[in-house]
Each structure stands twice: as C-alpha cells, then as structure tokens.
Length: 304
Image 1 (cartoon, rainbow, N blue to C red):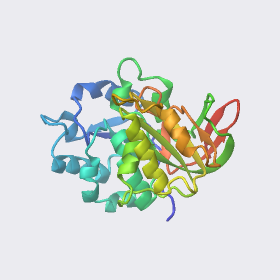
Image 2: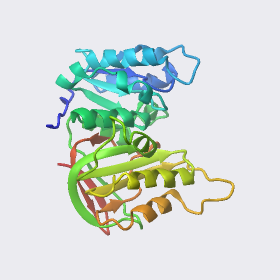
Image 3: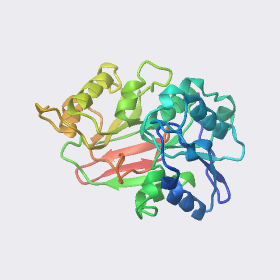
Image 4: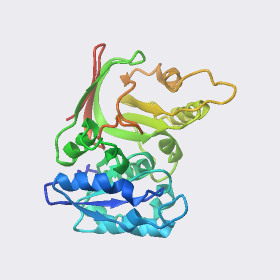
C-alpha cells in the first residue's frame, strides 16, 4: 500500500481541536489556540473541548467518537490536534469510520494515548501523522520553544533535522527507514489488535511516563517476544519520565532495563532522544522516511 502524506498547511487553513480521551479544562487550551491563530491558522473547536463531564473522560464514548468523527470528515479542517492524551482512544478506535478520511487524509497530531490512533492510521491505511506536542505544552511561557516550533515546521512541510547529544548506552550506526512508535505502554497494549504495527525495516521510537520499573521491563519483553525488534533498522529511546519503583527495588533504571534487553541487537540505538511526556518533545512524522545516524560525537535524525 502506497504511503499517504497529508497536504501541508498554509496560512488560512483550519486546525480542529478535539479531546478524544481524558478530560481537559477548556482554559488550559487557551494559549494553544492563541498561538495557532498567531501562526495564521483558523481554529475550530470540537464539543469535547468544552466538556461538562465529571468523569475521567472528556465525554461518553459516543460523545468522544462523534466529536472525532466529525473532525475527520469535516472538509473545512486540514489538521486535527488532540488536546491531551490520558486514556480512551482504545475504547472508540474500532467504531471510527475512516472511509472519507483515507481518501483525503489530514494531519492528526498528538502523543501518549494518541499513539493508538497513529498506529491504526499507519498500519491500516499507511497514512502519515504527527507525534507532537499537545495543548498543555503551549502553557507557562513555552509557546515559542524549539519543540513547539518543530510542530509548526512539520505542519508547514519543513523537513525535520534534529541533532542531539550522545549517551553511554548508544550503539553507533547509520540506517534509513520509515519511522514508527510512540508510547511504550500503548504499543505493548495494541499487539495482536488491528492497530498493531509492523516494525520490519522500520526505525522504532519509544517513550513513557509514570511506569513502575518492573512494568517497563515487562512491556519491553512483550515487544521482544512479539519479535518487534528482530528486523528493525534502528531504535530511538526517548524520555522515560516520573518512573516509579516498588518497596523492594527493582535495581535498575529505565535506561538500564532497556539497554539490557536490546544491547545484543546489531542495529543503531540512541538513548535520551527528545521525545517524551516532558518539555523535550520534538515533532516526529509517523510513517515518514528518516535517516538515523548514531556516532561517538552526536546523534542525528533527518527526514529524507
């Protein structure tokens, strides 16, 4: 199936904002909305952006599904920004009708729980999407940092070119392939489903937040036993933030755990790449062809 890249945005285009999973207060989106408008875009708000829900979710499954479906089908919308992740897309993914969307795809933006949507679009329709900052990342004076700017550049068709520092656990090498990945817990969660990703000849990136050390170990073994590492071109390890440990310590950091599991593979590996649940979160094109270079002096990831 031929890879489909949505049209890049021009000033005057419309970005729709939805909250397809966990609840987010409307005022926390204000800076994001103002910034997108300052970039020259119109903003269209979905019903879930001003939800009155009193539960974890931004609405019932039906409400969240209908809101996302409307944005996917709306001819006036050229990109869809998911305001936050959390949990909830798994509950509605199999009910989404992609018939119209796959004929004229648009950019889907987000990370965390949005990993499920990214993986589903890539695996089923080969549609490229954006693993990138969401609404809260614009707050607290951060609206013009390099990570938010990387989202603007990606939407406007500027090819990504990131260079970062080395790490002791890196494995040198150079490779080229389509980029896939996202949140580790979600990637482990979708194995065996219709959203599962084929990692053969791909560059895989992983990140996560708030997980117990033993659970990181378990999820990495799930990927390994599912042969997700067997035919990789390269591996990018992002941030593993706010990790937790049990009363009797696991005895290893997240990076120690990952290194022990992947160290015997021959493909290039880089650790501490700026893709994460924290401020350091570059926009990455899921399904885009990239070149990864891991050397003793630097790491570079370039869209080609």
